[in-house]
Length: 323
Image 1: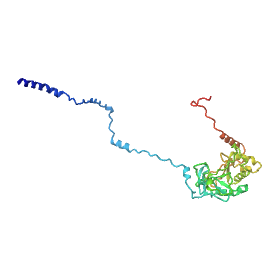
Image 2: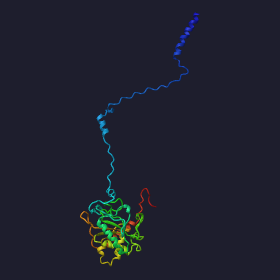
Image 3: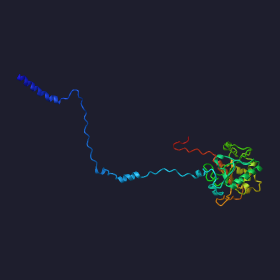
Image 4: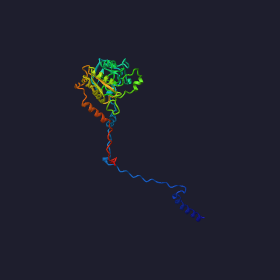
């Protein structure tokens, strides 16, 4: 009995350390993370000093500049008014840099004229110019025309225009179509859409005699013959035609010298009267001759050069040499 008890006691003592150290069979092994390496302390020179509160506030308080729209251009300002300035009639400045006060509006329809491109609102001028146009419109009947189709004069207060002309700024310039006025009143739509007739032939260097007739020449002569008119601008080909067809006119130097060649102006001619007051710059006086010499020839050479297509570009490294 005593021997049995001793064996049992020895067996119990042997089992105790095994049970305390052995892992259960159902348990899963756990992964252990390696300990993070300690970061080295930053050097004293790398440590940033704290920004003072006042400096932080000042940085936040700096205003951001706002984007401002550019001021409107002069042509935008002058293009807005619908009526003339209620002042005494006066042309101010030069033909290509100025304005108009006290302008009057040429009626859309008159007994001998019709205003064109009504939507532009450019039928305003100095009273002396408007009065001359009304007189001119009635007198062209002596040249075989029913009346005038009047193009741009000026804006209600003159000034630069959004489109088109460099001049016409002081109410002393007017465009007259080279198409005679029809014997009926055009509709508003027709006045916007109808195109004037070119006086040039297919070469663009001479007039078409079937279109530019003796009556056209007579109308231009009449316009240039008014004492108040200082310039009549036409295409160089029209000037040349007038030079060739008026050689027997003993007074041609008086009026033909005022007729000046210039770009365009083969659909209309341009009348310019002199400065009627002391506030505008007068036109340089003509030389006193008929202007039918080298000036016309030089202008036609310019026109001819402008009609030629530009030369092809020279081959560069990216294009390769021509074969």
